[in-house]
Image (spheres, rainbow, N blue to C red):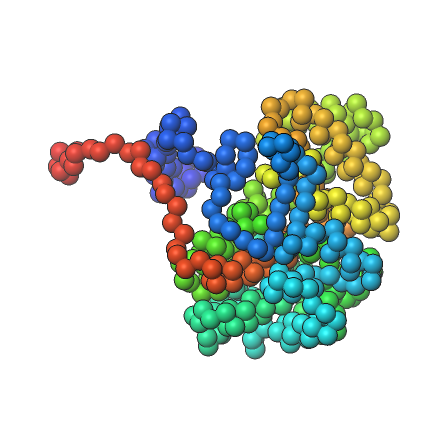
Length: 454
C-alpha cells in the first residue's frame, strides 16, 4: 500500500473511473429536449402508464369537474379497500396475512374452510431442503441479509425438478413455497450472520405448523420463542400493509420486466429482491429510525414545537443528521394528503408503544410528522401535498418488536413476495411480450482511429 492508503491498482481504477464518468455523463437538458419521462414519471409526478393490473389499486386523487383533485390516499387489494380488509380480521381477532396472500394470488377472499386449507398448505411448505440451512445459509454468512436471501432463492432453483416449467399450476406452487419459506430464509440468515460475523450465540428454531406467519417469525427470531399477542398482531398487520402496492413500484415493475423475458420463478423473485434492497425503495424505514435517533440526541425538550421545528429546518437545509436535506419518511411518490397504510399502522404502533413503555417516543413521532409537513411545505416547492408514509412508523415498530436492523428490509420482502407472486402470475397469463422500453441514443458518431494513431 502506498501513502494514500490505496494500492496502485486501486488508484488506476479511480483514474479510469474519472474517464468513465467524463465520457458517460448526459447533458440533463437533453431529457427535456427529447421529452424523456425520467423515472417513468410525468412532471406532475404521475407515473407513465406501462401496463394494466387487477392485483391492487392506489389512488391519490379524484376527478372533479374534469380536474384532478388530491384526495386522502386509498389502497385496494383485488378491489377490496385495505381499511375494510384490516378491519375484518382485526374485528375477529384473527391474523390477516395468510388471508391477504390468498386474496392476492386467487382474486377472491377465502371462506373459513378454504383459509384453513391454505394455512395447512403454507405450513406444509414451510420447510427447507435437507441440510439447506447448513450447506447454503450457514456456509457463507452475509452481513447483508437481502443478499443472502437472494442467493438462497437462486440456490433453491437447483432443488426444484420443475424449475423451468412456466405452467401456472407449477409457478403457483413455486410462489407459495417461497412465500412460506421467506421467514425461514431471512431469520436463519440473520442468525448465521449474528453468530459467524458478530460472534454471538447460535440457535435455530423450527417453525410451528399451528402458528401464523407473524407468530413464526417471532418464534424463529427470539431465543426463548416468546412474544405477546399484541407484538404478533402488529407484525402481522405490517406484513399485510407491505404485501402489495400496485404494479408501478420499482420491485414489482422488476417482477413484470423479468417475468416477461420468460425466465424462471427463482430468477424473477431474486431480481425483485435486488430491486427492493435499494435504499430508495426498501431501506427507507432504517433511515427514518436513524434520523429519529439523531433527533432524540439533539432535541432537549420533546414537547417544544419551536425546538423541533428549528431542528427539522436544519435537516432540510442539509445542516443536520446526514446532510442530505431529506426528512425521511415524509412524502410519497404517489400519495399526497395521506398514506392509508400509515394511517392504519400508526394506531397500532401507538398501542404497542404503551405496552413497551415508549409512548413518549410515539408522541414525538406524531409531533414530528405534523411539524415536518409544515416545514417541507414552507421550504420546498412541491407539486402536491406531503404526509408521513408507512416507512415513517415501521422502523419504530420494528425496534419495539426487537427486530434487528439487518432484518428490516427482509421483513418488507417477506410481505411483498405475496404481491410479486401475484404480479408474476398476472404477467404470465396476460402479457406474452417481452417488456422493452425505448431509449434514445444521444451519442455523436465519430470516425474510427487506428490504434497506432490514437
